[in-house]
Length: 383
Image (cartoon, rainbow, N blue to C red; front, side, top):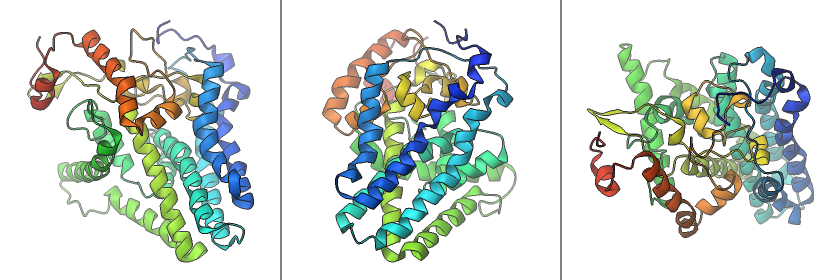
């Protein structure tokens, strides 16, 4: 199987039933309300479903190695686009109705309220930020606005600027804060990326404005839109739930950001693009991102795990992202739910992933014998 030979006929791709599994995220909405109204053990449902159930289902249902035609016209993808388009209002209603309800729910104690919004953060991070990622890559202004709204709800609006202007350009190089270094544990990666990605996003937007002869304070700087959206959501949380509602809003936002950066950590861990000299690097290829085509977790994550193709062709919508064989792109041994849990335990993570990184280096860049020296100086790779 190669990623250039579609195996899904167009007639099958455009059927609503083919798109239906990607709507599974909507099932988390009633689960969240069950947790809020019942408390107790039901507060475990959201993390258990998203992390453990889908990991188990991946084991049962295995991999999906089929590929749709990447040239499929967007008009044929209505039912796939629809789930990403409706999610922003769905998430808005879920988040702020719970911010109103939970602080006054007498059957929930303080610990349960915190646990409730940890679970909500799992939704807004696993689903909301992921859908915003799909939307921000589109040229349609409505979709980009929906991406901004979703990111505003988790106070991470700069992710759009960082992702589009920095990450995709510099992935696999020292200029990309989001590319996790070999042997860099998540607990070192996380505080580094929080600060560096914010700074790099602002600098990237400032440089774009400078190229147009405008100062960073020009009204077209999207950071002003980011700040307004975030402030509006903070004020709404305060108005609906008081100080308690505001704190719970911050808990879900922090959880969502943590979920995002866990995913960022595993997607490029230890992978490096060839340095050609004079600050230039080889073009991004499928080999520069970890690929995973586990069926069930890709339904939940709208094919985010087909990350090798996303970086190779960033303008492809999620239904037509291609998967690659082990000879064409490095493969994660498990889907994202298991891998993100493993990333929280650095010794286990290194045991799983470091041998794979070393095999990747030997496969794609056998001419490099001293990777420590190469990574420290970023000298050009031997010809």
